Length: 364
Ligand code: SF4
Ligand code: FES
Image 1: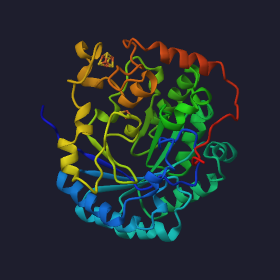
Image 2: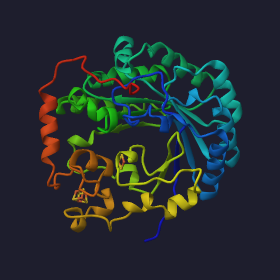
Image 3: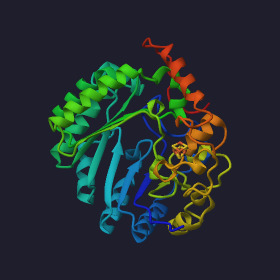
Image 4: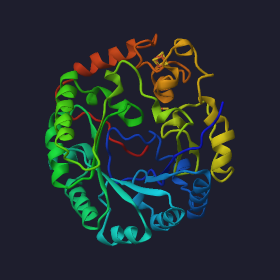
């Protein structure tokens, strides 16, 4: 099998974050000492240089909240010098005018800010702390400095009914691009699934609001609406296929095929301190384990879509069925598809706005 080079590097600089969103994709044990030992600047600089040699085209600095790393500017500057397209993916609350200007000087290409809802009280409720006004201020600052601005909103039962209002807000903020991503159920979102799952009617209304925004070209770089795969017939090719496009470096330096991969206990991940990105991409056990189609069992093994969706999401398969080699149960052909139907049913039973989230929080 020919292994193509990766296109994207996701640098999770830290799992620390002032927000407490109940759908966070960081691991449930993000506060373990293992993750508190964050990679030193020198290793990140090495990773950036290796990423450039490997042909990586875009680099997202994310977290947690990447602005909590005071060496962020050093990394941005190093990445910008290699010509890699750099994005800062932030909650926005810590973006001061000084830091934003410094990041501009260092060559940062693009900033993405997350917003939880179109109304302050509702947005703050989901974020778990007062943050809405700071986010709006950050978005305006980003535009003032001439950065392209993406606004990202994670959608779920508690904000889907305001999709139109959310799009209007993004328009007011002069977003260049909007990403409306329905919650994917891993990590904290899986713990809160019954409180977050939307109804099919909500999804339909949101789709219509998005269609209007697209038709009227609200945003110069477009609006992306990511459907929740629980309501689709086939799963998504998660990460564009395991080990096919993307590398993720977690705060402690472990290099992963996706942000949730540490949930698969059978895998061992190589740390940046012990291997180069090139070796990890081409040779490591973790990146090769689910690459391509040879690992598949039935029904994927004999399915005509096996090179379209690659059997869906390995992490979701593990989290829902207990086996990372199982067909993603989102697929209607999966023998475990009933697990998705049951989850939908349970979610529908809890339609009231209920303050029953398990907010992201450090383990005691
Ligand atoms: Fe995709 Fe497997 Fe379902 Fe076929 S059976 S559609 S390959 S997940
Ligand atoms: Fe890990 Fe989908 S989140 S493969």
